[in-house]
Image (cartoon, rainbow, N blue to C red; front, side):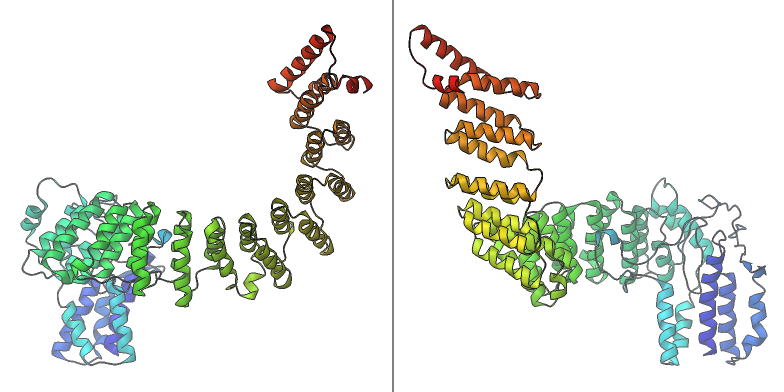
Length: 626
């Protein structure tokens, strides 16, 4: 365990120093010397007591001032990692910006930027795994911490030799600094020739650090990997490939995306073991962030060619990408494959797919996703179900599907789900299914959510349009019995239905009921009766309702005046009364249309011609008596 403590202390101390002073570029000399002491003592003594004798030599490599540690050393060429100017540097402090490496080796970080977080790349797009930490991503610190934790729980005598073997390859910090300086700078000439001139000593760890640097352009990272892959002392691994893809994906540059995809195709043709499902999923998410649906679809179709299988993230990311670009036919084709395969994403992601298809007016397809999620016990978020019901209710052919989903609502959710229930009631009334609409209404009264005036109005309107005003009046009484007050709209709709049935007296009685419950009515309410009496030829009654409107503070609009004037001219030939209404209308700031004005003039001229010829105008006596 003393060896475990030494390794753990080295890792924690390196991380703490870098966080404590982010503007300091820490070298590896202290940690390397720590390992060197450990290795030499293993060879010579094998006694854990060396820590008490030799740990002072390690501590002397660092100094502490008031709790603020400074940790610096010089490399062989004289350049400094403590924030001073370096000949080979590229950033504001003269030193190249490095990818932070958390264990034993390089612990060098940019003075201004934090090291990239390993995990989900586009959380706002919900691509890939919901877990922000990816187990397949490259993080030396996480791998070592896992190994140490495993050793702590299950002591393994072979662990020391494994750590010794892995860390026996030293990282030449001068070479690392030089490589990053070249990759971070603007290149002139061939990258491969520059790298060949450096005569580098490669290792998996060296390549991983370079590949993971967040400040190198994607095309340079790909170029470096291609060059390293040709060297005899380097063998590429899936972990390094993961790091390359993730690092380039974070940059979100379109040029990098296409270059990376071409590179992956080249790699897969040579060695399919270097490409896996997670890498291709990340690439699809990359194209998702750029809105490149066709490229993402091309990646999806190459899975099986590369020997990779689909998983839930593969399907979800591709379908979401295609829906965002309104390629719904392709998206649904893949969605059907997903549903048949049984690889369903999480319930939250299923809800997002349902919403995507609903927005594309494919609510029926979204309903199939809902049924499959229900079968697999992966219930989507309630907000997605609300949206699905609303979308299904807007289409006549799918209203009944929306009604069926309401039966799946738990009691505690049902009591607050007034919007989806209202949508279904409205849809049922629109298609004329008044029986089921009324049944649903009474179910809402018994089990919730409590219906409001809007729900009652949907059904009242449905009965009125279907020529059943008596059923509508029953609902009007039900509203009052539940302690609600029917609004003016409810009365107006039923009055209109009564008028169409020729029951003008019943319509007038209903108007009186409305006046008792509402101090101010709307012009529409009076307009229904004015038009009805005009069509019935009772102009005196129609004019009386016009006067009543003004007495009750309801201002007549152009429609009321136009209807009365035109009816007086065409049916009664009473241009004098029509002329008075026209003057009254003008004083109120209302202006009749050309037809209304021309009718008055035409009827007046007709009367004058008839009088001149000794004829008699029908309706003249009515006008004079009026």
